[in-house]
Structure formats: structure tokens, C-alpha cells
Image 1 (cartoon, rainbow, N blue to C red):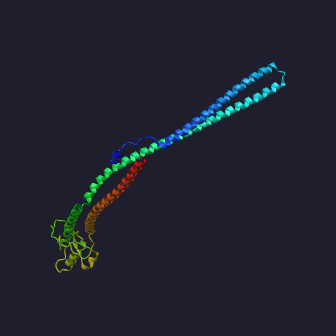
Image 2: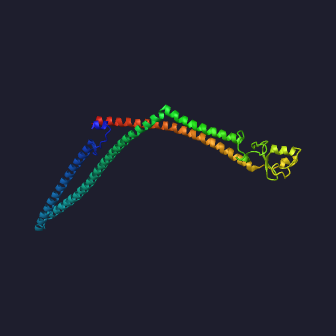
Image 3: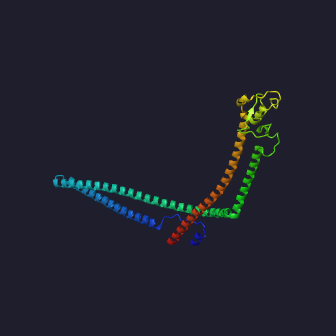
Length: 321
């Protein structure tokens, strides 16, 4: 049995109560049976006494019939009747005591039986716990294998390098896109032409190159509007060559093309959100790997403690055997 336990082979535990509990139940039951037998004998003796008294009453009654004039016999008969009543009363008391004693014994036996069942239930729990620990050992081996892979420095650094390379590639694409949007890299004029002034080819902004909308509906940056307005040549729209440009005094009332500003703001926000999203992904990936390491270490410590408790339990069982 010890060798099977040490080999980790699950062996069912005998579903019997401990020896001390069985001995206590047997001893208590034997004592109860002796007391019940004594009560029964006393009851039988009382019944025999009643029979004897009834016989005596009958005999004395016959004597009274024969000697009805004898007053002394009548008093004696009354006394015998009183004794008979007392004996019957005692018999009833003994029967009640016997019934009560029997009920108490049955109750105590039920309690002992419940304790035995409870002990069997606790034994079953221990068997299930042992099976659970054996299963945990298998899981521990799997987690250890995964831990060895994760703790491999070269493997971990390789994963981090892959992630860094991906992030660097994304950042490079972001910088390229930003430069394109800023006008620092030549672009096809058909590619989002509304982002820049069609006269100076400079990207619209919130300062000198604010997009201003003419009365004809065309849009130029503020700097180009000032240039056309202050020139000595014809002050007309450079696109339709028809509508008149505003005077210098009217420039301050020239409306801003907020539609273009809104589009610029949306694109800038999308680019910023994309950067934040990729940075967040990298951070989450790194945190997941670190959390996995910490979780694995905690699981190993927990399972080692459970194995130690199981080993101590085995030692105590071996000592009992």
C-alpha cells in the first residue's frame, strides 16, 4: 500500500469508520442491551408478582365468601387490593421508563450512525482532494514546460524584437504619412487637393494659411488672398477669372472654410489615435507576457505547497499504519 501511494497510484480508501468509533458503538450498544434485559426481567418479576397477588386476592376472596362475617378478612382483602393497585401503578411506571429508555438508546444509536456517515463523507472528500492534487501535478508539468519556453531569454528577446520591428514599421509609416500630409514629400495633386492651397501648394493651418472662402465659393489660404488683393494686377478670383476679390478692408470679414478645417482635424485625430492604439498594443503585449510569467510563478508556488501538504498527509498515514 505504501509503495502504491509513493508511486502516485490512486487507491480507494476503505469506507469504514475508525476502529475507536466502531469500538465505542459496540460497547455502547452492548451496555444498552444489558440495561434493557434488566428492565425486562424486572418487568417480568412485576408481572409474576401481580399474578401472585391476583391469585392471593382470588383465594382470599373465596375465603371472604366463605367467611363473609369475618371483618378482619375484609380489611385484609382491601389491603391486598391496595397492594395490587400499587403494583399495577409500578408496572405502568416501569413500562413508561422502559419505553423512554428505548427511545433514548435509539436516538443515541442514530447519532452514532450519523457520525459514521459523516466520517465516510469526509473520507470521500479526502479521496477527491487527492485525485485533484494528482491532476494538479499533471497541470504543473504542462505549466513548467510552458514556463521554460517563456523563460528562455533568447526566445523572449526574439518575441520582443519582432514586436519592436512591427512598431518601428508602423511608426515609419506614420512619419511618412505625416510628411506627405504636411507637404514635405511631393504628392499627386489629385491626392486630397483640399488639404493645401491650390495657389501656393502649402498645407492649410490655423495661422497664415487659414482656408478662406471667397464669395464665388472658391477657397484660398489667407496669405494668397492678401497677395492677390494687394497686387496691382486685376483683383479677380484666380480660378474662375470672373468674380471680384474683396478689398483690404473686407478681408477681416472673409469667412473661413470650416469644412476643410474639420476634415484636417479629423485626419490629425485619426493619425494620433492610430499611434496611441499601436503603442497601447505593444504595451499590452508586453504586460501580457509579464503577467503570464508572474501567474506561472504563483501557480508553481501554490502547487508546490499543495504537494508538500499531500506529502505530510502521506507521512501521517504511514505513521498510523
